[in-house]
Amino acid sequence: MSFTSFSQKKTKDSTSVQYKKRVLETTEVDLLMSYYEQDGNHASVTGGIGNERLTDVTPTVVIALPLNADDVLTIDAGISAYTSASSSNLDPFDASGASGGEYEDDDSNGNNRNTAPTGSPWVESSGASAQDVWGGINIGYSHSSDSRNEVWSANVAFATEYDYTSIGFGGGYTKLWNEKNTELGIKAQVYLDTWAPAYPTEIDSYNEANGNLNNGFFNGIDILDQNGDIIDKNGQNIWSPLNTTLIQDRARNSYTLSLSFSQILSKNAQFSVFMDVIQQQGWLANPMQRVYFADRANYYIGNGSNITNYTSRTNTDVFHLADDIERLPDTRFKIPIGTRFNYFINENLALRTYYRYYFDNWGINSHTASVELPIKLSEGKFTLYPSYRFYNQTAADYFAPYEQHNSTSQYYTSDYDLSKFSSHQYSLGFRYTDIFSKFKIFNLGLKSIDLKYSIYDRSDGLNSSIISAGFKFVLD
Image 1: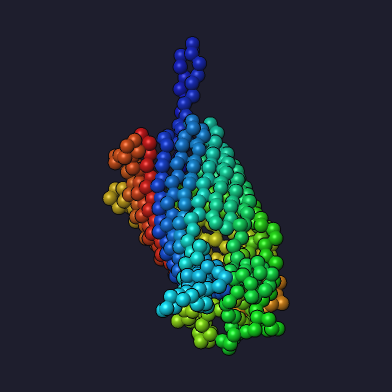
Image 2: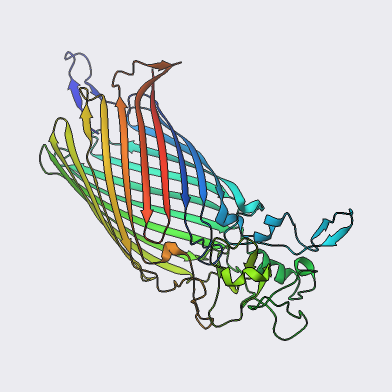
């Protein structure tokens, strides 16, 4: 972004009038859309194994509105509509069409009979959590000084999903000097989230029935041991969750302080560094995610003959009852530190590089590196930008795979996002730019089109792809 200004004096009988270029000349509208899909074998909702298939469509609109020469109001609103095989198995027994209590069906003579529900971490359930819509809006305001060497900004945000709501607010200050070749920025952001927790069906139902396996959801349902034998629900060796205490504090708050420094080194090179300091507190674990312990007996619902085949995708009709939900510390301190270096090679080719180091007090250390090569075609109207991103991280102190935790631990998770892994992402983007906005839709002139396709591959078996599109319009 560049700024210019000039002044003009009238005759000695008139007052001096100063003119300055507007920060944003006219209203800009961005229409964005992306489609994402993934698959994998380590669903966290089912304890670190299971189907991770997911699709997500995200339409978004961003409107930047100049209020005057110095002030800009930005409205960023969007939704994210997704379907998730993993989340659907919050209640895996809906795959049988059952809804709890005694499961009934009609036999060939039209008589009702009790039928056991079935479920599997590899079979997508038809439960209410199989799909959902996230919605969010962020409203930002920025004010630039007359010299354009100082910028103040503020924002408020709101987002909601079926299991949480989030309110955010923040502000920032940017200072430019050295003929705008040097820039220093500081920003603070607060997010106050509130859980509306959803729990695994068996744990939630156990609490509702006060631990009585003959009431509520469990009424008329056989529970199997590791050998596939039906247990005596009134006996001593019965299933129960390790901990029946669920979320007590429904808050999950995040506080971020961001610092950035940018320097233009020459007419061809620009360098920047940045750092965030992030403090989180509250219920930081996900109450949907199951955990299984190596030192506790296993119990199941479904077809006992498939218990020995439980961790294979060929298991379609037996489900392991959870030992507990994910438990994590109620505080987390995170620091990412990064740098960017951009170099203008010639009028048709540029180099953009990025590196970030991250660490937190949960034991995760990570490295991210990426490179992008924008290639201008056809007198600058068309640009191709291939890119590559590499990432690796260590595991959190509290992570272990399915059935490898001990029940004596205070904290535990089998979420593979907190495991040790590395990943590669390959992308190809295309941009069309028309600075004169010749193509019109009503009073909107098309300024640019962006299309990008990325594929992502993670060492734990997760893979995904995303295609995104963006259209920028300016108001005539």
